[in-house]
Every structure is written in C-alpha cells, then in structure tokens.
Length: 467
Image (cartoon, rainbow, N blue to C red; front, top):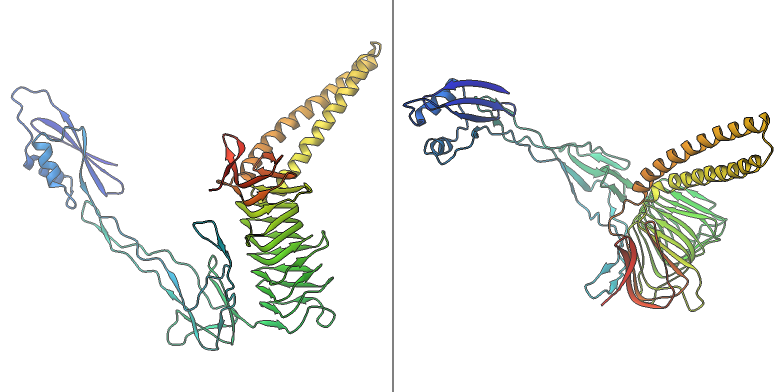
C-alpha cells in the first residue's frame, strides 16, 4: 500500500493507493487550528494530482466531502477498471447428448417412463462437435492510467479421439472418421466414434465371454456363467442370467436380471432393467427397475427408483446415496427388507475397516480387565506386581489407541454421512419387517404405513404422509 501525506488548511489528508493500484482512499483527519477554513474541491484535486492519480477519480464524492455530506475518516475517491475475462471455451455439439433414461416425475407424483434411443449414430465425415475458443476480455486501467491487458476465459483441451478427425479447413471442427455411434464424456470432453458391436443372438458358448472397447448391443440374453465387459454402453434386448457384467457406461436390460446372490454387476453410469432378482449390483449412478427388485443387494451413488405404480422392493438391502423411491416395500409375510440412504459409498470400506479396528481394541481392553481382575485376587508378591505393571502398560497403549481410533472415526464419519437431505419415498405401502436407515439413524417399520416419506428431522428419522 502506497501512502502519501498532504496538509491542507482544515484537515490532514492522506492518500492511500491499494489493491494493486486499483483503488484510492482519502484518510481525512481534522486539524484543530485557529482560523481554519473548510476544505476546497481544488485542494482535494491537487493532492490527488500530486500523488499521480489520474484515472477513475470520483469527483462527485470529492464534492460531497467538501459539502460535508461525507464525514467518514476513510473514503474511496478513485477506482480503476479491472481487466475483464473473456468468454470461456465451450463445445458445440451437433448431436443430442441427453442420454439419461431417468423417469420423469410429474407434479401429481406420477412417474412417466418412456423408451428413448440411447444410441446416437453418425455417418463417416459428418460433423459432430466444434470447440469455441476462449476469448480475451476488455483491458483494465489502474488509477495512475496504466493499461493492463484483458484476461482470457477458461480453456480446456479437446482433441479428436478414436473414430474422429479434425476438419482440414476448420481446425476446431471435429468430424467422424467412420460410421458408428458417438461416445462423449461431458466432464473430460472426451469424444469418440465407436463401431457398435452387435451380438445377433445371445452371449453363450457361440460367442464366449466378451471383452470389447465399444458399445454392445445384445439381441437376446447374456447366459449363465458368461461375462461381458466394456468401458461403454451395453443394451441387452433380453435378460441377464447369473452373468458377470462390467459396464463403464449405461446398462439397459429390457427384460430383467436374475442373479445367484454372489456374482456382481458393475455399472459406471445408470442401470435400467425390467426387474432385478437375487443380484448384487454396484452402480456409480442411478438404478431404475420397472416393476421389481427382489432379494438383491444394490449400492448406487445417486438414487434407486421403482418405476411402475405397482413396483415393489422385497427382501435384500438397497443402498442409495440420495434417494429411494418405490410404490411398495415388503409384503404381508414381514420379510426383512433394508433401505439405506444418506451415505457416500466411496468412504464405506474405510469406515467399516475403522469400526473393526475399534471393536478389536475394545475386545483387547475387556480381556485385559479380566486378566487384571484375576491377578488382583492372587497373593501379593513380586511376580504379581510385575504382571500388574505389564498389564497396565498394555492398558495405557490400548486406551491411547482407542482415543486415536475414535478421532479418526469421527473424521471418516463426517465424510461418510456428508449427504444433503437424503430421503425415502413410499408411494403406496411399506410393510413391517422393513428397516429404514438414513445416515446413522435407524427406523423399524412396526405397522403398515401408506404413502409416506422418511427423512431426518431433529436428529431422528420421521415420516410424513404424501398428499
């Protein structure tokens, strides 16, 4: 900060130049002197001019100081113009990238689930995307009149991926080098055109296991004991039967999934299936089933939704970070069904491991209590004293470990339960035997409840009726 002092006939004025020469303040201090006269506009202009201030002077503020309308000790009297950023780089797409099959929820609570085309195809040499280059903004000027250049908007790399090329006449335009389907990741701006791998019938002994680097369309089923793996989308026109599926994109199964309770299906984005039965699913996005999820273990990083009005979740454990929505949960036989929301699944393994550590240390402490109690009843001698001293040292170490683990667990819990407004919505009925978990709170359903929403209020799970 530059400070320059000037003395007037009525006040001492100190010019303060701050914020990288972009702002000027006048610090005014009254001077008790006989025959003092009011400040003049010319005097204030003169001290600013003497200080080298040439740009952005607020003459109206100077007038208000002279007229006594401003009596502050420190007043902003000049301000430069900051250099402005230009437009950020952007991608102009020549195709629709709205590939989510998320059902639309209407105001009346009705869920509309419609078939859409998940595959965006393109012909060879067709334009598919164009990068709009970041531009430079307008220049700035500091209070001394020095000009600084404008700032460029944010930029990011955008290079042709597999199956694409740059237009020879327009470097920022990307075209398809093959006939195929478009794969575009909005987060990384990765763009490819892939050959669609089509299985005309089922994945079985006629095809063997599939490990491909393209999207896959399977006209019938994935048979028991076989596997399909791709970093892109999989569209199964039939069903999946006790198979291993690793899908980096969207997995769509028209009929449904039958598992063996052990084999895992892993999905990178969204899973859409008619039904899911006895299956273990790990999904980084959301899971949508048309009419049933039965005896399955599902973990997903967004939401689980039963789409049809008669859809039901029976048995198993469903975990979703943000929301679970179903018309019916459980049945008249009180089958145990667990619904859990409000957890960040990427922290789950670390959280459970720390809980095991805490339990093990507590077990050691309880065992030490028994040993110390047993030795305490023995006759006093040197051996007894040595044993007690040894156990007390171990006790101190265990106690220190307990404190350390509890502190670590508290930090992990904060991340594990860091979810805003998790919710469970039951649109028709939820039966006894259902357990609702939201973050670290538990609610056991003891009677049939109709049209309810579960959430946390006042540090406990409460439910309210849906109108």
